[in-house]
Image 1 (cartoon, rainbow, N blue to C red):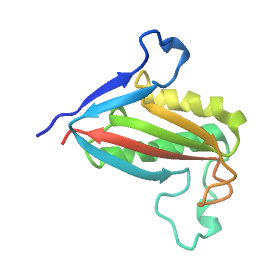
Image 2: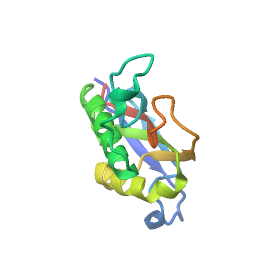
Image 3: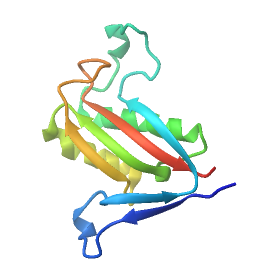
Length: 143
């Protein structure tokens, strides 16, 4: 069994209290987990998409972020991981002005854990035009 070691990469003079994420992450050991992009939509849905399958999604950023992160948590648990195993996140937002609502929920799920992070604004997700957020996650669990 190979145990992982995760190290935060920050500059020596970095004002950590101003940052929700580090400059980078260094990982040795463990098994890498790459999650497909996660939205508030049902994880398993029809292809081609059927609009009615997405009618029960929350309509606000806070609700959609929470629903998506619950799915991330469930996927990680299925491989023996937790949110503390997340080393990298990419947040795709339809509207960058809703970023603080996303961050509020992110703090609920990650607490003081700070994976590396990138946030970008997009026109829409491939899943459904009502999706306000999609999250891409890389985690490392003990092997």
